[in-house]
Length: 430
Image (cartoon, rainbow, N blue to C red; front, side, top):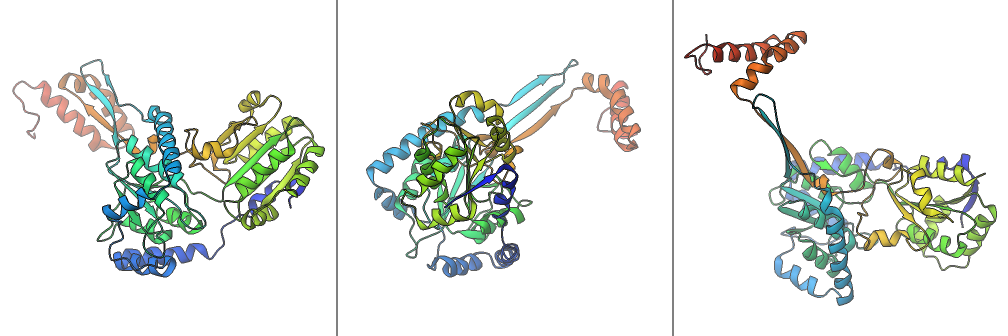
């Protein structure tokens, strides 16, 4: 089911998840179509890929309420808990505005301003993800975004899943756009007759969604370019092989290209995990992923195992170790770390509070999980009075002349000279 490898072979597992070369040109054609024909292109592409022909791509309020009401009570209750924890965890992430006074009366400020409109993409292909609605839309609203559009592919009858509709209400979303794939990303980034242009697009998607985000990143802010999901489990002799096996399967069921790796210095544990996988009932998607990109990597030492995990910078890293808490400091490049046998990835996927929208494919070495700060922008404000400009003018002009920007210097010198002339007005020319 999975191969037992040594550390030198780890890189080949990531290489197996490279996006096919046919995706980029297909996405470019979709973007060009949406740019040229707007709503008509979105309507036709939605009919082609998802089934329904929608006169209005947005779900009307009465249908939204009816679908949300059909959400099972137990699921609704869990979504309410998740939303409360997500809001509590993300609230400190909104950077505060601040102001500083200069020594001659000037004031400089940095204002934190929420973006006007956000698009939160929620996949709807192999599975529905109401948890992603909470992780994206609730955080956007927390950050102060006024118009939060949940974007998800429709079912063949034009509806969406009740769980997604309920999550959107709980998260405080303002609209639901029934569209998916590259055409949805293009419509949000470019705007159409009915679909307003957004300032940021967040949320995971398939290879076409990710490629559309890549091609449109100059038009709109994006959260990240997500690849297939991944888990790395670093375990030692204290780990239960059956527990490792079920955690590998849990991540593999997301996607046939999911990456699921055990790294251990204990060769006997690696063999026991392979045997434990053979005792589990594994679905078709997980089986395909484990066959293609599953592995148990045996290292010489635990230090080497942790160093390899850190080098991989995985989306999810589980530490199933005798002293798991002490190992956290040794894996700073993982996007999210799950410490000990009672904190598997699903607790982070659903209820713990930290965001499950995470960088993949090793990008965690420079990228961060989705946060409230992704939904705001900062504005610099500079206020100078006559005294502050007189104090700073010579230094500003010196730097401008040094850079060869003599008109910059002139703009300063003119003001300083005129403000020093009795009765002169700063608005008059010489």
